[in-house]
View 1: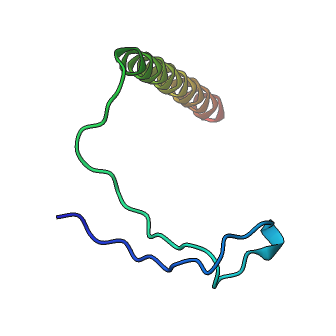
View 2: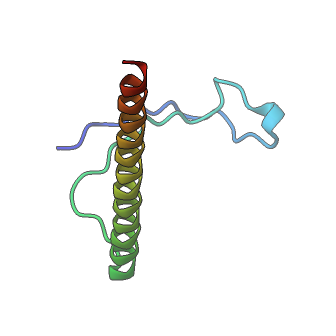
Length: 84
């Protein structure tokens, strides 16, 4: 059974935003939606494609960082060899 909403009734609808005060507005507690959501197949495909591209970018970034670490390690090793 879904939780009940807390509603404070409005005394009269405001006509301008300056007329709004805490006593004359409806306050409805937000509810979390649960269960199935209606997604179009095209939405799912586009989200999957976006995630696939994001994963590829992350892999490239990881590979670039690994190369950078290897390069710096080689430079440090070369510097140690020269200082001996």
